[in-house]
Length: 270
Image 1 (tube, rainbow, N blue to C red):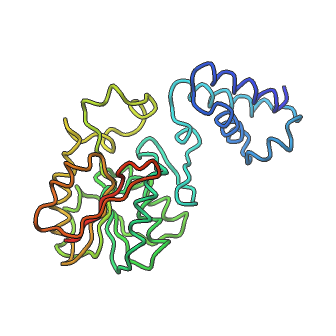
Image 2: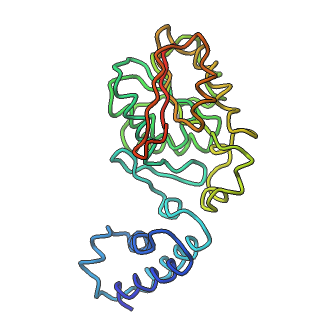
Image 3: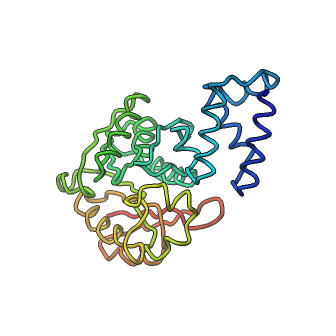
C-alpha cells in the first residue's frame, strides 16, 4: 500500500464517521505514525507504507474514531506560534485563547500571575513574549508536570506553584493576573462534543451548576493578590454575570470580542 492509498483510506474512514476535517486529520495521524512532517507525505506519496507505520497509523485512526482528540493522539498543540505538549491531564489550548495573550501584551508590567495554568501555554507564552517575571498555579500536580516539561523544552522561565487558585501566594504581589478558568455549567455536559466531554479533564472544564463557581472565587482572590492599580484579565464564559461580580473595587472594565464578535476577554483594574 502506498502512502497516497493509506491517506485516502484513512480519510474515508474518518469521513464516514463524521469526523471534522477528515483529510487533514488523516494527514496529521499518518505523519505522526511515520515521524515526519505532513509535507513529506506529498513528496513521497508513492512510497510503500512500512508495516510499523501501518500498525501505528491504524491505532491512531482507531483512537480518533473512538473520539480521542487528535491533539492527545499526537501529544502536541500549536499555540501562539509554538508547539506545546498536551496530555489528557490538561485542557487543549484553543486558538481563541490567544486573544487573552494579546490583551495582556498591551500592558508593560514586572510581575504576572496565571491562575489555572494547565499545559502552561499562557504562562510560558507570556514569559517568552514579555520581560515580566511569570508565576503560574494549578491545583493539579499532573497538569503542572506537563507545564514544567513545556517550560523546559521552550526555555521559558516560569515559577510553578501547586495550590488552589492563588492560596499559596502572598497578598498584593502581582501587577497583572490572567486566567482562563473552567466556565462550563454541569448542566451543559450532555451537549458537549464527545471529544471534549469524554476526554478533556473535567476539572479544567466544569464550574458548578451555572459555570460561575470558579469566577466567584477567583475574582476576590485576584483582588487580594493584585497590587493597587493591578490588572485582572479573564477569558469569558458568560459576560454579564461575570461583569456583575466586579463590584465597586474594580474600574476601567474592558470587554474584547473574538473574531466571531463573541465577548471573549474581560479586563479590569483593581
